[in-house]
Length: 418
Image (tube, rainbow, N blue to C red; front, side):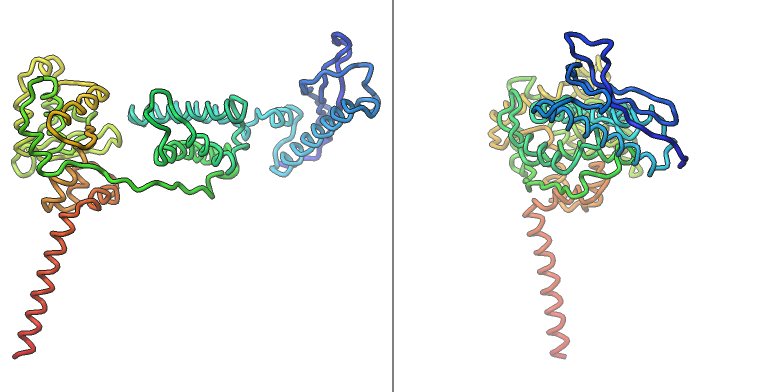
C-alpha cells in the first residue's frame, strides 16, 4: 500500500573505528525517522574525507573514482525506493537495505533456486533423473566460477546472454574420463534442466520475467539403433562359455521381448506377474522413471527366461525374477557379448527397448498405440520416433496401399466395360 513517508540517504565514514588512518564507508538510509546502515565494503583515508559534502576532497584519480562510486550507490538506493513505492510496498529502512543487498523475497540467488529444486525433486523424481540434475548443477557451478568469477548470482541477473554463454561453455567442456566433449544433444539436455529450474522460479514469482522466452533448443537428429531379426536371432542362439556373459545376454533378450527398462527389470518379482484379461500371464509394473503403470503380455521367449532363473541361487537371495547387476557392469559386459556374438553395433542395454519397439512389435504389425502403451510412453509422439526408422514397415505399408489402389483400378475398369 502507498503511504506518505520521508526518505533520505547519508554517506559517512566511521572515523571512531579507523585503523591506520582508514575508516569504513557506510550508507545510512532513513525512512520515517527509522534508520539503518549499509556497509559499502570500502576504506577511506579520513584526512581526505569531506564530512560536510559526504565525499572525498580534491580532484585526484582516486577521489574521482571513489566519488563516482558514492554517486552510483546513492542512485541505486533511490531506484530501490522508487521501485518499492511503485509496487505499493510498505517501505521501511530495513526493506530498502534488504532489497539493495539482494536479501529480499524478490532477490533470490541461483544457488537458492538449485537447493529448493533439489529438495522438491527428492520425493518426485526418479534416481536417474536426480543424478542427471546433479550433473547439470555441477556444470552450472563450474561455469560461474570459471567464466563469471563468482560462486553465485541473483536470479534477476539471469538473461539471454547468460544462457548463450552457458551453452558455449558446455560445448567446450570435456568432462574428466569422458571419451569426447559434450555433444549437441547433451548440451541441450543440460540447458533444458536449467530452464525447468528457472521456470519454477518464475512460477514462484522469484523473477519477474523468463530469460528463456527467446531461447529455442536445437537437437541433432539421431538414429536409434536396434537389432535386426538376424542379429537378434544370432544373439539368442549363441552359446557363451562364460555364465556371466550368458546372464547379461539373457537380461538383454528379456528386455527385447518385453520392452521393460533396466531399472524396472531389476525390481521385478513374481508379484509382478498376473493373469491378464485373456487368461495369459502379464507383467504389471510401474516405470520408475515416470511412475506410469506398464502392462506387458509375457511372450514365450520371455517366459522361458523367467523359468530359467526361477531357482537361480542369486534370485533365491534377492527374491527378484533375475540376478541383480549394476547398470554400469551390465553395459560394460554387453561390449563383450557383442564381440563374441559378432554384433558390430554399439550394444547398450537401452538398445533392447529399441529392439522391442521396432523389430519385435512395430515391424510385425503391432499398432503403434499398443506399442506406446506397453512402453509406458505418455505421448504417442515419443513412440513415433521408433516408427520412423523402420524401412521394412514402410515398404510393407506401401505394398498394402499399392494392392488397394490396383484393386480399385481393376474395379473401375470393370465398371467402365459394363
